[in-house]
Amino acid sequence: MKAFTYQRAKTAAEAAKAVASTPGAKFLGGGTNLLDLMKLQIETPTHLVDVQDLKLDRIEATSEGGLRIGALVTNTALAADARVRKDYGVLTRAIVAGASGQLRNKATTAGNLLQRTRCPYFYDTNQPCNKRQPGSGCAAIGGFSRQLGVIGTSDACIATNPSDMAVAMRVLDAVVETVGADGRERKIPIAEFHRLWGDTPHIETVLEKGELITAVTLPKPIGGQHFYHKVRDRASYAFALVSVAAVLQKDGSGRVAFGGVAPKPWRVEAAEAALPNGAKAVAARAFAGARPTHDNAMKLTLAERTLASIMAEARA
Ligand code: SF4
Image 1 (cartoon, rainbow, N blue to C red):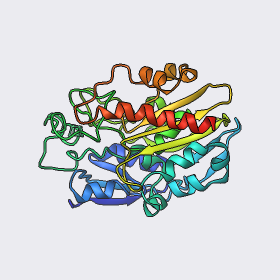
Image 2 (cartoon, rainbow, N blue to C red):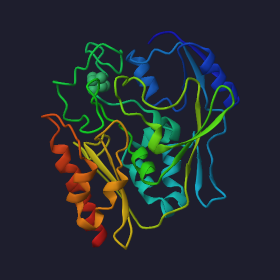
Image 3 (cartoon, protein in one colour):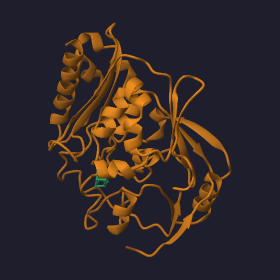
Image 4 (cartoon, rainbow, N blue to C red):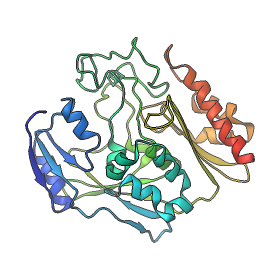
C-alpha cells in the first residue's frame, strides 16, 4: 500500500473542503471497497478524510411521508429498519442479497452507491483498463466478458455497476443529497447520479471534487408487492449476473429496474407500460439497443426470465 495521510473530519463542510483542496484526497466511510483497492494499488489516495464522526447515521421520517437515510447508515441497519421492511421491501431484499453479513455491518449507504465495478480486468494491474488508467485500453473487450455489461456500455468500457441497493433505490425514485466544498447543497435524482461510461469510464458519478453525500431520501411509499431477484454463479457473496427489482401493483402497473447489465441501475420507464403484456414485452423495450458480447448475450434471456419469475410469483 502507498503511504497516505489521514484526517478525521468533524463536520461535513470540513470534510468537503479538505477533499476539494487536497490533490489526490478521498473520503473514507466504511472502507469496505476503498481499502481493498488501496491494498491492490488500484486506488492510491494521498490523503484520507474519514467521515465516520459526522453523525450521518440516522434514518428519519420526512415531512413528505418518506424516509431520509443518513449517508453513514450501515447496510445492515437500513435493511433491518422496521419502516424500510414494511414500506420499502424491495430495498431490504436487495441489500440482504449483497455482500456478506460482516461487510453489510460496516458498509454505508453512501459507500454502496460509490462502490467501483467488479470487472476482473479492473482488478488486474497487469491489464489495460480505461477505468483504472484512462487511455490505456480495455482488456475486457475481446476478453472474458461473461459478467460484464450488455447495454449503456461504450467502446471504452463495458463494465457494470455492482450495487444491489442502487437497483432498488432506482425503482423507488430515491434522491441523493450532497454538500459541496462551497457549502452548496444538491438533491440529485438517483436516475441521474451514475453516469454512462462514454469516453471517460473513470468518471462514474455526477459528483464534483469534494462533494460529499449526506443522505439518500426515499419518497413516500408506493405500496404494491416488492421483489428483488438476483441470479448469480453461487448462492451468496457473489455479484449479479442479472438482478431485477420490481414493485408491482394489483392493477397490472408497476416499476422495474435491472442490475448487473449496465453502468448504472437500468430502468426504462417507457418499458413499464408493457407490463400487462408480459416480461418478454418489457424486456424487449428495456433492452432495445443492447450490444452484448459473445460471452454475455445470455443476460438478455436471463433478464426476461427473471422478470417473468417475479410476475408469476406476484400472480400467485
Ligand atoms: Fe476496465 Fe471497463 Fe474495460 Fe473492465 S470493461 S477492463 S473496467 S475499461
